[in-house]
Structures are given as structure tokens and as C-alpha cells.
Length: 365
Image (tube, rainbow, N blue to C red; front, side):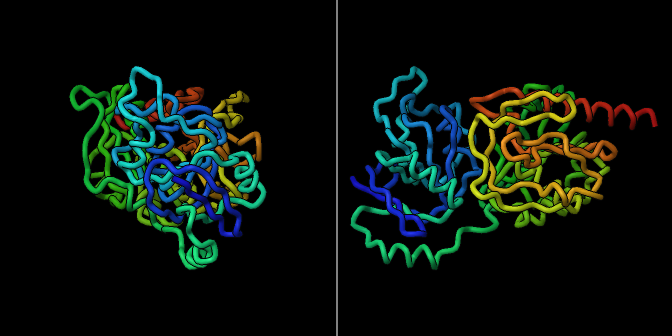
């Protein structure tokens, strides 16, 4: 089954289809990870996007039930050089294509992914459509021009109810996690450290969170423009100084906006498992996993009370920040990354240490 990708500038790439046969209008991005395609297609931060994998062979170890980052994947498409439909792995329960059909994710293989990646790097992330081979190019371009990519996508991937996770009995700490499209491995990391976690929808108010009597607040990753998530920004703003707060990825951007800083859209974003970040507090380099289109404006942090703690070595963008007075910190990358790297998992320990200090001060007061 021949399928093709048509970019908004008229560029076309013809290949073989796999996964869903549905036509898709997407934002086209690329990821440089060598492994982890299951985690990528199940990461809610990719909602509405089609991901070009720069590593050439995808699908060779299949899909298993344990490694999904969400229950209902919301990515739109996956573009690969070579697709393997005969996986070899004792944990495999189905092929990548079978999973993509089940969740309506369109796939194309057999195209020049190096050329397509260079196009995105040169011209930036763009709109594209994934269609059948016989689709008229001109009509597809007209549809692309008239179609706006979804806004306010956090509301589509956030939980619609409050629920508990982690250690329910004998938990050492109680964390409220605002779900903006949270990956499951974040819950695993907190649970492994003896936490009880109450997960709440993205639009939960500060008052409702305080009523839960948490020891700390976590703000999760998620898709889209952080400025669209006004409810969460307002909630975080009203909780600053009242609880220790830790944010990851979109949560990092939301915290910056809550303090009055600004964010901006990167040309082609950061996506992959090999991004070097310098920790300015230790002067050590961490290899990190990243997936984001937006970044915090460095100059806009002046006068907010937030200080930069980590920078991206490749482009000097802000990768971490903190306000020690308010017990708030955040990182742009993913310390919970699965399948890795695991250089930054210590940040969860720092969050819990911050909570313990806050609790101790409250008892001494």
C-alpha cells in the first residue's frame, strides 16, 4: 500500500504505508533516539504530531504491554526509513503496525528520512498531510493551507478525574500531580521513592489542591503551547510559596509563565535521547531525553525570582531553573526518561528532600 507525505511547501515523499490507513494532517517533527519507539508513540506530548525517526530500523523488537507511557496514545503518525514487521523479542505481544492500527496512528516507511530531517532542520517544523498515493497534490495543499493545527491540546490528554497512585498505605510523602499529559514513568519514579500520588486534571484549582493536604506539587509534561494552559498557569501562580513545586517539560514552561517570564516556539524543537545539558550548580554534563517545541526566554527571567540552573550545550537554551526562596524548581528535559538515559533521575530525590525540609520547618515553626 503506497502512501505519501505532502509538506505545506509542496515537497512530497512517497513510501509504503503501515499502521492506520487514515489520512492525517499533522505537525511534522523528528526524533534522534536509537531506541524507544514504543515510548515515543505513547508519549502524550506528541499529540497531533507525526514523528520522523532518524534511526533507520524501527519495529524490530515489537510492542509489549508494560512500556506504554499512556493508556491511549494520541500521536498522529510515524515516519521511518525501514520498518520491521517480524519483531524478535521475548516480551513482544504484537507488532508496531498492529498497535498503530488499533490507535489510528498512520505510518510510512521506505522514504529518505535523512533528507526529510534536514528539511525540517533547515525550514523548521511544519504542517504536513499523510495520504494515499493517488491523492491530488494541489487539493492536499489547499486543505493544508485551510487547516489549523489543534490548540489547547492538554485538555484532550489530561485525566478527566482525580485518582490515587503509588504507595497508598504507609507512604512517606503525599504528592499532588497536575496531569497535563503525564507519562507513566513519572508515577513509577515517585512511587519507587515511597510516595502516595494524587493525580488531578489540568484545570484543578489551587484551593482544591490545598484541600488534598499535599506535601508537594508536581506539574507534568504535556503537548502544545504552554500559553494555552491558562488554568494550570493560574493554579501554579496561586500555589507558589505554599508548597514545594517541581515541574518537568511543559510543567517547566508553565512555572516560568506563572512567575511572569515568557516562552517562545523553537524552530524545530528538541526531541531525542542524547541532548547534552550542563548543570550550572555542579558543572557536570548530563545526557538527557527531550521532547518539546517551546523554550523559556532567558532574558524574560530577569526580575522574576527564577534563576537558571541548567543550559543546553547545543543551543544555550534554558534547561532548568529554580527559586530557592519559594522552594520551586523545574527542568525542560525528562529525568524519568524510559528507556533512558538515566543521568538526571536524582532530580526526584532533590524534590523529596525539598519537601522534607519544608515539612521539618513547618514542625519547628
